[in-house]
Length: 77
Image (cartoon, rainbow, N blue to C red; front, side, top):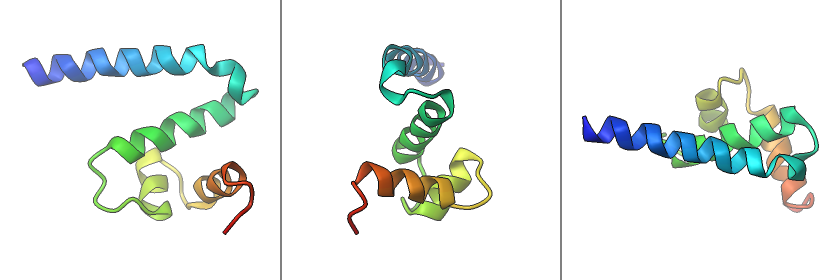
């Protein structure tokens, strides 16, 4: 199917793009969290809140997602 092929192409591009940005994150675990977070944001997740994003990313709780957002936002909010 054409849609499946498009998803494969896009997925490959996405992984290559993040591999080129590996130096920005410093550690592999942080890069993986960023990849999972972005994939959840563009996925057909009904609501884009911490719990559902964490669930989509395979986390048991939203703690890591919330921590990442807190750090990225400079601790504001």
